[in-house]
Length: 392
Image (cartoon, helix red, strand yellow):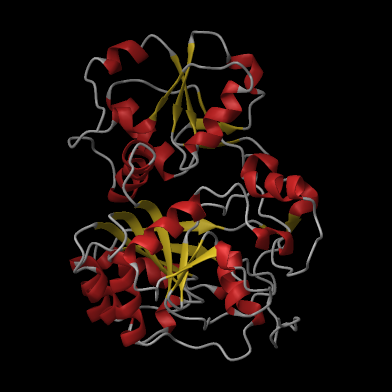
């Protein structure tokens, strides 16, 4: 990466602010503390109320007070371009990426290392490359879910006859995808609830054949506990779990206890609120308005594959799969197209779009910086029956 042993001596002269209080930020603090450097605080856009973590305050600062040269921001967030934009808007140019501190000898957890590594892959390998490389890809293996959340941002609440995708379908889809993609940093198995598909271990075995898929993760709501044999497989393949903590609905203690026993890496995400983004309604916005919604959307780079089609975001993927919005061929890439050059061209065009026509049906998923109290709704509220919607 960009590790410079002389950098530590340089930053010892600065007051360090770690931008991002997630796992990457926590890894940065551990690295800095190993050199007897204690940051003055974490800055996090989600910290509406100040609190302490690792004996360091987590705050949402008025950044304009931290623009002089004695301060240095270490950027430890996935959306580093948004962090840079936020700082530069206030004339702050004293910052470095977290991966400048990363080397093979750092004493941090796998998950902390992986979160910092992910920032490096996106900003150094992918943005600077003319190859077809993806930072993350959400790979839908089931429409079924163990919960019935009314406001699921992936629109599972609308499926009346959800299904598991078969092993043959998944193998064909992965094969077609990897025929055109040069590299994927993180392929994420999602649903619904991916552990509901009984063939997920076999799907995992297919994915691990591809050396140009660097990391594989499974996104789960924590309601289903893998068997002993399945945990051993997760460990063998180096797969990590992202677990959403939905309180009493999830089995966090039991699941994490088992993962710890088998040394399977994981993260647990506390979900204090959701945002309003699951209603499928045509908004009749202007082009400029849809461009702004797209620009400020936290899901605009969440490339999603479902049913042999690649979409720019999970909302469009599931809304079109449900036939809840009109089919717009410019808003997805058909992987069943046997013309590889045409598929590659379509992918590049998709990622260069300033917005999607289908954005007009979405309320938008604002980035953390833009979320206000009116956007927030209670998370994971359950319903008994699927929600009705208009089919196209």
